[in-house]
Length: 415
Image (cartoon, rainbow, N blue to C red; front, side, top):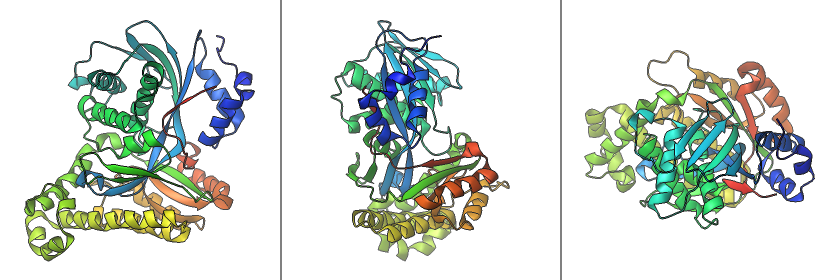
């Protein structure tokens, strides 16, 4: 079947090449082939989109108790070709998955669809319509490099991709990235059935490095410059899947909130750390040691975010990396989200032990929600290729993802 966009057309398109060079670490030939392949069998007008994965850099499990966090969008993404049509439905094909469609009018919440892409699509459509924005039908073909359930936030990338498609095609790009993030979170909370915060959606919607303070109902956030072009982020999938660990994540929030309610507050950010320290013994007696340790992590981690912000602004690479390592150690020993209860496979601790012994690694930590999935490592550019090869021998080529911070969030790629 013929392709609507030839690879050669994209290779010779100055606008596409300029944008692609800022989004990807892969060679231009591969990028053009990827997008060209998505247009196979299409006809008429076609629009190209990209939505990145995200990495949580510092601020592990602070957002749900209104702390602070730093997130970054990465060059691993969902690539998409879209063809608008007059039908009142959206049809999506995604490589490796069965096609599915959703009506623009039948938007009832279906608990049987919790955890599905179809549920997210319905939630996004409903979020747009409830806010008075336009929606329209289209056919989309997608290909994702974002490993599902591995902490790179495939669900949020999909949500913000849909938001950008509706924004660009039907709303003249007038909807802000913050509102798109809110709509994405709404779809995930209400239609997908996952009580997520806004960190993933904000990071992906904005792009680059985002500093987020969750003290307010809607977090304050601002962009920061990523000065460390010498650093590569290598994400390693070390086994396991986040999809069946909702109870483990919920326990972190529950225990932190229990400590806060001891003081008559809802979240730890409302409790003065001195009051917390003075009540450690009765807190331990009432809620157990793990709840106290997790609260300790919250206070320490929020301060580490402030330190990391300062070192980013001052381009203090070594001090920044030291914060990453301390954050990772705190997640391991205090937050305790490196493996679920009763797990004997120990995939994350195994991976962290392996990379700790590699001379190329300058910082390491559990990645994202934790308990399974991925770890995040930092290496210098000169050591990256050899390090990746060593890790591929241990974890498999398909489980090692070298990437960089990319400046753009979910966008339409104009050509």
